[in-house]
Figure 1 (tube, rainbow, N blue to C red):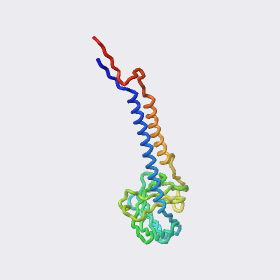
Figure 2: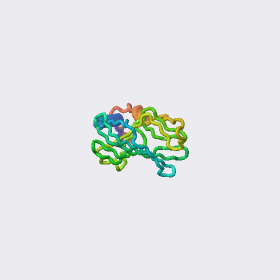
Figure 3: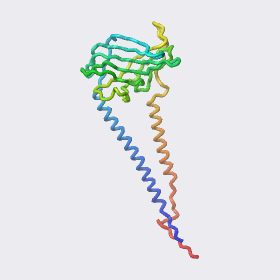
Figure 4: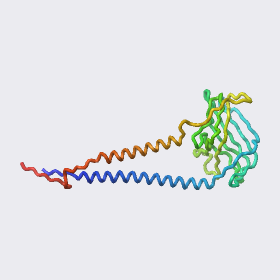
Amino acid sequence: MLIIIPNVAIIDSVMVVLLATTLILQFVAIVVLYVLYYVECVAICSRLDTVRLDGQVSSLTGSLVGPDEHMESLDWKSTFRGEKETRVEGVIIKMTFKRKGKEFRMTGLLVTNLKVDGDFQESIVLKTTTTKGYDVSAPTELSYACYEYPGMFPPDPKAESNRNRKYLAGLTFPEMRLQVFDVESPNRGNRWYCGNFMGIGLWVGILVTLFFALVLYWGFSMLASINTMDRFGNNVLMRQTCS
């Protein structure tokens, strides 16, 4: 009888090499993604301009667009200059709020009639959640307030009207405070401050850390479970039995 036993040490070495190669490729892919993201951010930020709408609002109107839906329109007819000398001639901001139960929430944000350096932009749809993960919502008897920097309401990339545009726009509302429903003029309700117990950045950091911890744990457990067979010194063991 001839028994052929493969060299387990070679198989274990191949497994270690494959595992190490997988970890290295994952690390390289992450580094490449971060470099591409940084390059794109630098290219975009070089073209950004901040325009302060510090002039007086020409008109402020509100209307009911549904049983529990309200729209506010802020119209500026002045001309503004950005920090990089971008010229903005007039802009209208439309905010839509919806009441559900005892809570109101902003469900729509639109920038219209925007003229940038002579180029007219009819309507730009914005997200209703800021880049810091804040949304505008509060109980109806209270006023929503966000005195810290809440982040920017960015343009919605999924909106059909935002595609193939020369310019897009985002909005920030410093020291924001508003109340839409159940307002007893001239007083507003107590403040309902913005903020989350755990921001989206913290959640992403925790999830990414857990993922890499699991990958490292799996890799080290695989390395620790390797058992080499020291009993056989040669690659092939031949044993002959005679009857």
